[in-house]
Amino acid sequence: MLYTMKDLLKVAKENQFAVPAFNICSYDMMKAIMEEVEAQNAPVILEIHPDEIAYLNDEFVAAAKDYAHNSKVPVVIHMDHGGSVKDVMRAIRNGYTSVMIDASTQTFEDNMSLTKEVVKLAHDVNVSVEAELGTIGNNGSAEGGSANIIYTDPNQAEEFVKETGIDTLAVAIGTAHGLYPKDMTPKLNIELLKELNERIDIPFVLHGGSGNPDSEVSEAVKYGVAKVNLSSDLKSVFFDALREVLTKNPKMYEPGDVFPEANDKVKEVVKHKLHVLNTIGKAELY
Image (cartoon, rainbow, N blue to C red; front, top):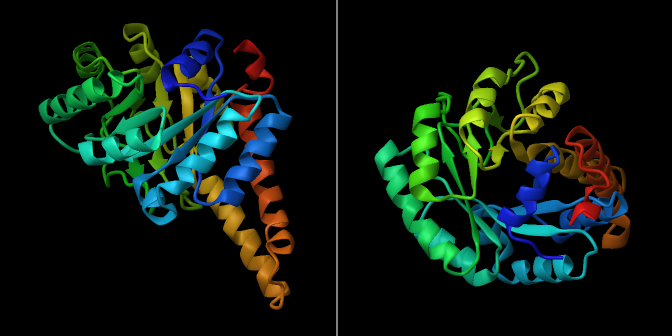
């Protein structure tokens, strides 16, 4: 079942669970994710970053849409971190049901202006819009981010949501894209999240959800976080498994032999994240 982000996250916020948004960079990764969420009867968001679609080509989205239409669980196809109207229009033409416009490194006024423009374009064709206020850190991920984390300002956030009409807001409360160094322990600003949740009604998005402690992420779900972005956790186990399989079996060439172990590793991460976000079995609410 293909859903818009607005309709998907409304249910999640009302029932205090979050939907994982998994970045997909291959058909095998998408297949593994979908098989596991269907086994767990859980809704899911399939995210494709502009860099990922530049590699996969527009035709890949058609495959994702077919998978969603034929699935028994709710699925959103979302553009992650679009940086321009051009990115947004490409996603809309391809059939995404949700887009993110990320102007978070621009001035507040420019961020609001660009986001308003995107909301008008997307809402006219029933596509949901996510935007970001504040900055997410970056541990070397292609998803981008900032060297310095700027926390979301509640006063600005309240004005931003009211003026733009966005459907969901990515908040900066101390996360970073990519995998954290072993000597670094990330910490979410839950008190800031509580204040944002008291003042703003729409669902929040937690970017950079791969490296934070499970307990903190689970707690964030109690205070308005209804979507958690996950990329590095999946890609790392997927490609590590492929490297190991091909190193041990240098003459292995058949996809049906090469990919299953990597797909199983992805499924393990997917199942774990569904537990953390309280998403298992929640497809029955739609």
